[in-house]
Image 1: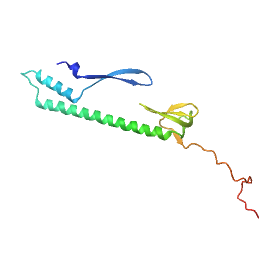
Image 2 (image 1 turned 180 degrees about the horizontal axis):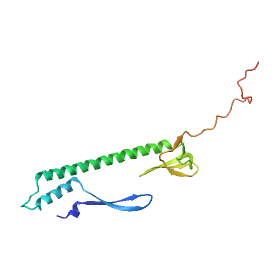
Image 3 (image 1 turned 135 degrees about the vertical axis):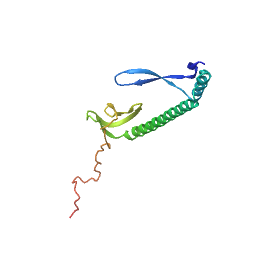
Image 4 (image 1 turned 90 degrees about the vertical axis):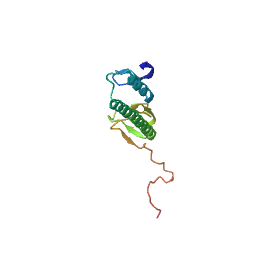
Length: 157
């Protein structure tokens, strides 16, 4: 049996600040696992057959790994949803970075695989992270339309 035809090898790219590297992660679905298990049964030594408890243990381990993968995918989906909501809520807000080096009103936000990047009204951009100060956009005081320039609440005598 050709194991290469069973394994579905995918290539993922991980970007880190220091280096960029491509890693290959083999994935194995339930049917492929069963094919491997059957091949293992067919090719075992008849004088020393594998115990049925070993097969059950392999199946249980594979089930556990499969559930863990599904859980990780769900968590990643929740994180993505959370980042989308964060990006939406930041637009129009006044923000100051944790180092107080960058600040302004958020005009756009971009969801990336490692978080949310904001674009400010002054053209600067930075990643949202711990220590970010968020406030309402400063609005100018309302213009005086009363026509009276005295500025007081005096009533004529």
